[in-house]
Amino acid sequence: MPAVEVRDLSIAFGSREVVHLEHLEIGEGEILGLAGESGSGKSMTALAILGLAPTVGATVRGAIRFEGRDLLELSPRELRDVRGRRIAMIFQSPVASFNPVFRVGDLFVRSLLLHGAPNRREARARAEEALRGVLLAPDLLGRYPHQLSGGQAQRVAIALALALRSRVLLADEPTSALDVTVQAEILQLIRALRDERGMSVLFISHDLAVVAELCDRIAVMREGRIVEEGPADDVLRAPRHEYTRALVAAVPKVGRVGGGS
Ligand SMILES: Nc1ncnc2c1ncn2[C@@H]1O[C@H](COP(=O)(O)OP(=O)(O)O)[C@@H](O)[C@H]1O
Ligand SMILES: [Mg+2]
Image (cartoon, rainbow, N blue to C red):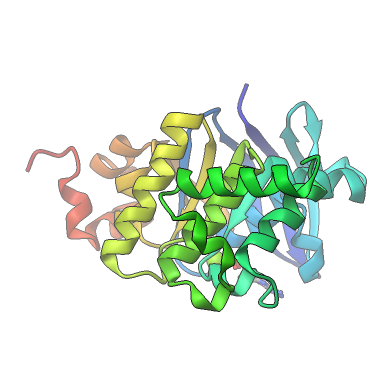
């Protein structure tokens, strides 16, 4: 059974449909890459899975199966629980997604108390363990979000998902704002989460080279639709759709992956 299965998903702003997906699934323990140019509907797809698309004014129809339920039919309360705990999302600018008035430690403690930690002490212990899991020192818990580097902030966001024991991670351009070295570290970390904890990941990027490096499978979106989907190696080596061919050709590094030439 896939971790998340999307069927006949339609996302619209007024009468303008911006996403139309017949089928998309994130396999259990899989890293699925969602690639495609800016404006193709990648972020809206992730927001819809998280139940947040209506908060930006979009209308969502279809079905999103997760743990035996349709996320589009949950009550606001049930949805909040799924969103806070079972499905986590990280963004391009992690610092901006943290509440600036709380120290990192308080962010963890508040989330963990809200989602099942019995007391502050236990929450604090889980926070420290999660930070170690992303190779950050526990003393970072004393800092404010603006005192973190971009790479540290992204690690903290990932650690929060770890602490909450999320099953699915939606990563929307998580490395696009980072320099190349830090970007590689974050990709490695996401891979480790999958390898060691079996987390299922939707990895969104406009950058096919990054997607190629990390993902098991790739879905390519264009104008709200998936134009091509398959194992990463196949898509890169023998893209079937003209649009994918253009994307692959635009990234010299990608042409080499598994191609032997
Ligand atoms: N709040 C909004 N109001 C109206 N249209 C929006 C809004 N947010 C996104 N869109 C439109 O939805 C489409 C898909 O956007 P998005 O999912 O952000 O693309 P991507 O993440 O692939 O760059 C785009 O055409 C964008 O203009
Ligand atoms: Mg986007």
